[in-house]
Image (cartoon, rainbow, N blue to C red; front, side, top):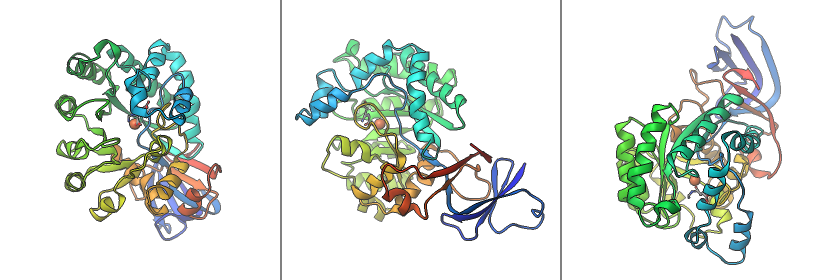
Length: 387
Ligand code: NIG
Ligand code: FE
């Protein structure tokens, strides 16, 4: 199947036409010979970008944590709420109580909200089940979501997200008895595309994360890490040492961490929604990342607690306003760098890439990221087909 998208302003490329063959971009700019009789659709000069890639979400969950937000507004800290059994553990209770179909039904509208903003690939983590069966239930829901809509879903095993109550004070036993054996089981069921962890004082130590990473590497799985979000535990450097695809949050990333990530080719995933909702004050070291040429991705971190955000366009806006990215950097952050953070080949306007495209009622990335709450998506194309 061949088709031509015409009369578009192609982000980052000259010309106004894109040829698609068998679901992939065949050429950009002007048509080569042999494409004269191929059907052409015209788009009135609208902006064309890759479909967006939301490379860090906790989209599958049950319940909500609005009350915790009220408590934070009244002065309680995220860490204090987590230590008192709230936070991730309160969502754990809701996820454990939810039947798989109910979890699916709660999560689907959130996926639809992302798709309505031009998302074509979304990463979805486990991490609220915290038992082998419940972590697997979450990833089954993630896979089912991917089968229900025209979207690429990339799953991450995040059992090392919090220590559940039955293992309180025994984090090492949790790693040995749940996080590592559960990973092998979920992987055997084809449910795991990558492995993530939460390296933080309120979660797991670098040594505990390293053991999960070693198990993941033995299975040949790529790695990611929630790193240096609330304090500097050397998470960025740890991710780099293991050749991780990405280190995410990175507000407290050190200069040594930046250097290690640059050398390892580890992407820095910026999550301004969590920074904003937690009213953090230390922004990630964007100037240092830029100077070291560490690719910066931007994602929603959609989750019920620290970032109840279902808008990648607002994440772009926040990445610019709060962290100092340029709109062009933010655009790369939700497309090619996000795809790099997932190890997938989409997110780029190059011949051979999947024809996952978004066409916008907007003139430029700055127009996309500038307005808040607008719905500028005109059309999304997924694997070459309009959706
Ligand atoms: O990416 N930092 C840890 N994990 C999530 C928060 C999850 C939650 O609060 O439910 C995050 O922000
Ligand atoms: Fe997260």
